[in-house]
Length: 624
Image 1: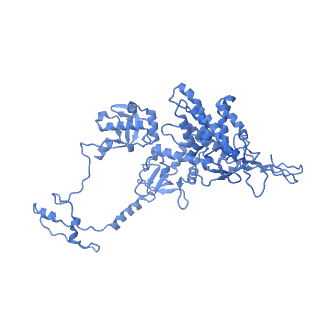
Image 2: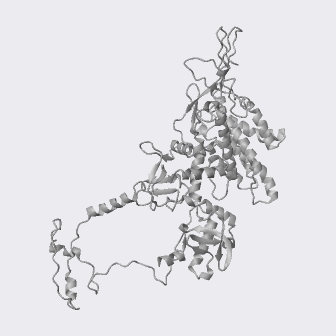
Image 3: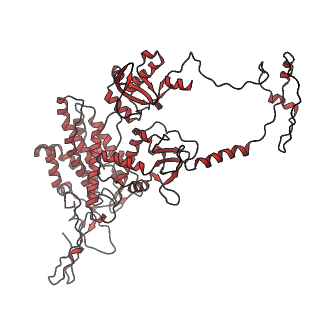
């Protein structure tokens, strides 16, 4: 359906395929000279070489250009353009044709009904008409393939896993299909020719087009739209029916919560979300394939906004679980002062790269410069006023300055913590010598000679009842120009000290220390998101430290509290689940189990960081 101008001049044909005009050198007249083949640009962006709606979007070129809009096709035409990929999905499920049409095809139709031919992004990946439909299908397909190498419900019996495995696979497929479902609600505005807007919260796009008998619709992209993936939960009922959710929830209580967490990109602290990991990895693979195969990006790679979420997630995971990312610790990657939070660079970039490579996420940049550019563009990091990306900081104890990057807000790294870490008193951007000089000059300027306290009448009266010291003339005092004038005698009542003590001089204030016979009790400081059962078990273990040493259920050490795994088991807490929960909240000083001597035996246990247990017996001995 290409529009042709039949003249003696060469014919120029334009077809809008994946957002690009393709130039065809064929002509209506046999005497016309063909166009140079080098001018022809071929594009094969995804597994399906044809673009959805390419023929119906063909239009005659005109100047100035006019937005032709997007045609209101029916759902059958939308899915027909992706028939090859749909057939591959059917083979991956291993279903026969009737079962596939009864179970999976309605999901695909409902998803296509909602997104229609909307692009996924304005100018980045899958930015052509139909891009949102395509990225959902491809991500769902690759996420479904990933389920073959993972075991869901590992604690269940073989019989239970056999019944739950198909539901886990279907939930993973739905999670991949709806991974970008938030975009119609937050990034784009759909209107008809009269300017009437589609309400994505109320009905699918196809239903709106059919209700108002709209033939073509137009798009307006919201400027500086913020990615809010949790909005996809409000559009999910338009794609996944209540019957589907009830079927997924049959016989278990995990599949639906894990699916919702994957769509909204919300972490689950009490359990590892395998479903979300598969969807995230599949989405990164699909976007990377598109960017690599897209001819319009050859020469200068375009940094996609999809990299931001993976890099920020890596920063938060490192800050929560990596001991080397403890703020203001010795040789730490993170330093926090009154002038902001800084990360040592490029050492932090190496940690990010290694973590994401372990997750097997494709398309993640490996060069620290590229990671720095992505984080600066996303607003995660802040550059200097002159545009320089790195800063020089002077942490206490370091002889030389460190090159670092400045985090825009400390809450970006510690969003999952109950409170922010404690900051240094001195600025990190100021060398220690200059900071010490400034601290010494400030009190010298403001300090003035204090007036000598006058003896009170009470002291003179009491002096007659005890031995008087030998009277000696006071040393001469040279008056200073700024010395204050003598105060009026009537103001002596304001300066009278409390009742005098039996000694000649007022005693110095003594520090308040606990009595030796009243030792401080050890206490547990655990984040609020730690499971209640595990919190109670650890609190009971820590409470035993207040009794005789023979009754201790854990062993205090210089670097924390060693808790044997047997002590957790005795309190009905599974050690693997406890280690996973403790690692997720950052309470472990060592990420893996260790062996220590405990009550004369070599036992295996976990080491709780000393920051989470106060008033340990070893700390009380050091304080004494």
